[in-house]
Image 1 (cartoon, rainbow, N blue to C red):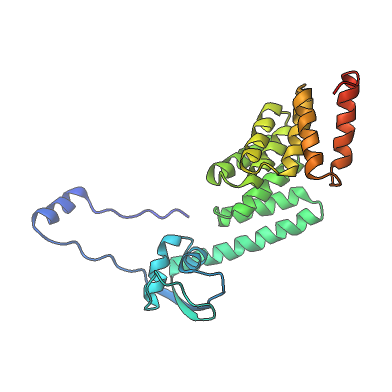
Image 2 (cartoon, rainbow, N blue to C red; image 1 turned 90 degrees about the vertical axis):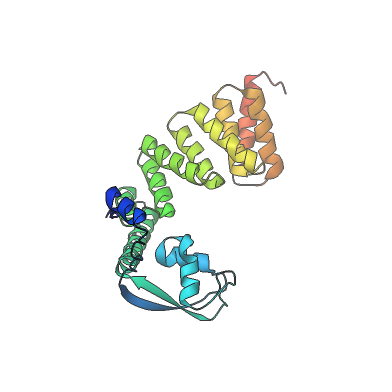
Length: 254
């Protein structure tokens, strides 16, 4: 639901300013409930604000409501009060409902029912658009269903929001590969390796893409790199087979 902020007419605002009057202070939303939260060892004012309000910027509000300085993090094991307005409580309910939809989607994925799972992830995102795990898994299920362009679009948005997340970039490369966009896949895998040079999945996947693009020399180099990183790994046998095939096609040359 979209909430529209009411703004005073410009003429009235100007009149108050000229008359030297101060506008009335902002009225705090009516309190719906107060929750007592037991602080975990890894929690901070910012994480509490994110979890309860969906806004880390409200960390100072929680600290002040507890008579504490936001610069000093809450002590693990202590109890803090979280004051929730009606809107805050409704948003928490939406996030909890979204989590239920998301978990149901994961169960369906484990059963191989990707069509039903995608529907659950879509519902989760309607309730909580900020649930990035649901976005990621929706992209994966779209890919499994053959909707590669939809998957790539979602993953591209995730990469733009979290450029340092190599998992998102790798998935984008894999989705582009499945869609036949080899140049795009190569670009994505190279970007992963720029951030994580020893990422074995990306080294192997890049080698496969390079081979398919006819870049035999680069492909051999990447397959060898993979074998140096993981000589007995999941794809080691496949890497050796690819190397043999390339070298046979080149007449046995190195």
